[in-house]
Image (tube, rainbow over all chains, first blue to last red; front, side, top):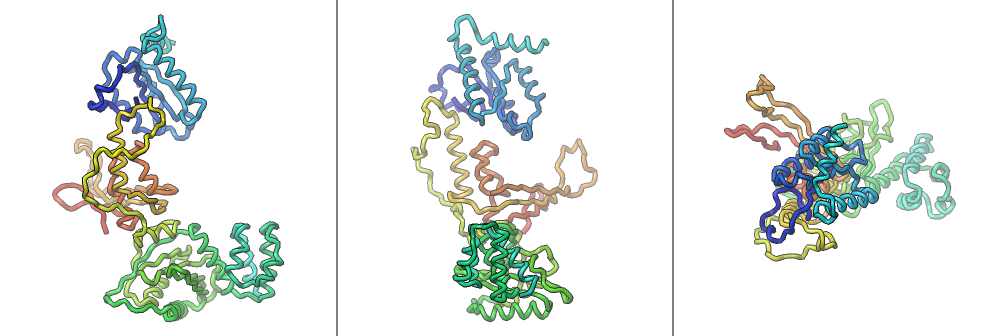
Length: 131
Length: 346
């Protein structure tokens, strides 16, 4: 399901399946997209932040057009205990690789991979912060 | 033939893309078909131009004839210059019959009485457009053929499109001559400038697709929009919002292509509005600021802002009023009302 912001329109509530993963997309060229994501985060239930939220930052191929600082993004990931994935969706190779990563994460979040749960993502995050 | 004329012809030919040279020379008409046959148009431009000059030598071309080639080039490639729009005013209501010969005579006479050294050329085109090329000199120097001014006048309208050369000092004289020759009383510069002459014409002659305020209720259940993604597994949560944005955008911009402008400039002379506790400016003076938008195609990019999710729809009327108001240079002053605000000055 694609949405431009949260909260989701209530009229479609009855048509929506269970949500397993929320990926917030940030375009590094647009401060507006970061603001939008920050505003939308307020509408996410706390339980999602145990590994069912991730941030997808696109546009990293063009360094000259960065409007958002790396610190802001890193901060976002730390505050919300969620992984940040960098990609360049305008390049087909990166598109495919990102889709595969997200799909793998989704499989885990939906409980389709025995022995691994979404909580593993949060613990991975903490390890990275320690070193 | 004068050396300066030869050099001018050579340089003008060099400006023309190689594949267009033959057609333009034919339009020019100075060289006969047999003469043109002798030129090899597949050699490098440097050599083509030398051959052309040689043949012009045989025909003893003068500067006025050389200037015609320049007009033809600029008529085919007007977008290489920046054009400003001027509007002439008549106090009376009478629409006099436009006499082209009379116009040309009066125009030349006015310019020549002020400046002895000018080269003036006229060329008429189908859409009632009169192209005028003026090369300016001084009482002591010959006209500079490399910095001419161009005027495009549509005789059935009060509009004149001017591409002045760098020598702006001749502009008042040029305006005066135009007003006199066309039997108007006054001329004023509109705040409208662009590289695209045709787009400027589209704006002032209202030839672009405008948004008409039709008040009929939007038909419900109209699903004639093709599905955005062929993949039915992708579900757009905000489809209603997207459709609203499309609708509002279409209402504001119309359906057709937008006129091509490169800039919009807003000169702000408004008070700086800050938190009164911050007290940034202790003097209550207008905060002077210039905001300039530039783009290869400004209006199209504004039209695509909301659908691309980069701005909220509807877009600020300060941006969308550009074609209707026929201006892209604005001055915004403080509104002298009880409520603080701003208005666009005429």
